[in-house]
Length: 97
Image (cartoon, rainbow, N blue to C red):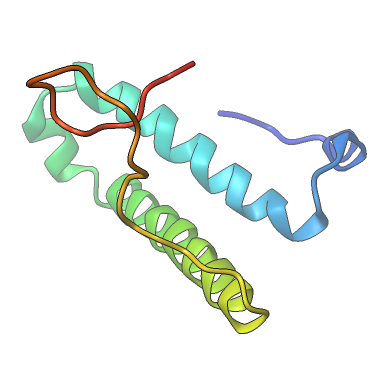
């Protein structure tokens, strides 16, 4: 289990970001465990599944709330990938630089 120490707040994280970071850490940890755990075991772990789903909901709600807040102050969001130059025949997808 991952434990967050109060010193994380000194690293530039806002206090309201800590629940998001904790949820994201739990989701990533559970995803790693699910990759090696038999599906039947995951299916009967109702508490773990409920926490996993609650964490995903928290992250989704946080991102959507942030997007709506930024939209209300005039920033634009696009859910489409930005257009980057591609080579002939490749799909248009962002490139890492």
